[in-house]
Image (cartoon, rainbow, N blue to C red; front, top):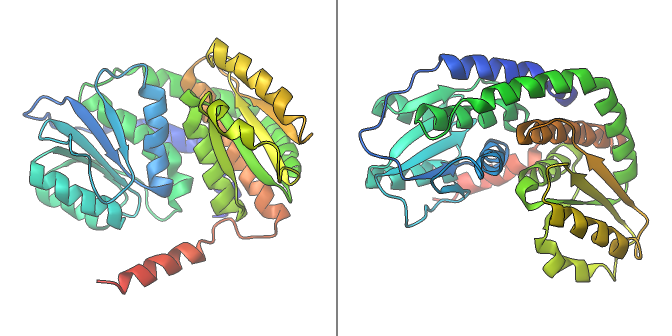
Length: 330
């Protein structure tokens, strides 16, 4: 499949992920869970980042996103560790799992196979299997929803997210033609520029997702930041070397009122140094709808940029080179 075919299939992936998640059985832990660590990187890790954004106002225990070999010192046997690796062979995640096993943490796995799948089967860990054979970043629907289902099956969140996802599917299907047209305009705006993506702090995950998709699919550098944090530092950087930047504000009606005000002032400041600013407003009545709308639109933007840049959106040769070189180091 080409990357645009995966993007077209996004609503169906959400439907399939809901079906798999609802049918999956988990055994209950013996210990009380008082914290959550989600381990995952890259296309496998972004689901955890966005799940954390969505759950921050819902879940009543701390959730930490771990994107490294080491695990935080607060991890104990009462920590639920959700290990996400599409291939099942991500070395950072596998290393972190060994540390968690030593502590006797509660471990749950999300993967399509590989070593992580073997570990889950050998140790009788709870796990949900993702369909195999695709680029990890194209399987976001599964990693994101399987994390939510995992937390639900440990009685840490309720099932409200399921209906919100169903509403998101309907929204995306109804808006699909308009989203493609808008994505084409945004890609044209970004082409031959360095994109700068700004979001509200509570939606940082969608900014990260768009940046990563532009990096991987479009083969372009890109950066993101969040409001209000960037108001305390980056805003001062809008003076020098600004002519080749294209600014995108990803906005939502549910963003904090003061954040909305800050963004308006930010636009005034930035417009003094570039006229390359656009706003992209999400649609939908819930945070999950807003998030999935932005993600689907951003994925389309990255595809149209890949076409304009005449690059293969699927290809990841330099990442494979890095992995092969690391494999030589014992």
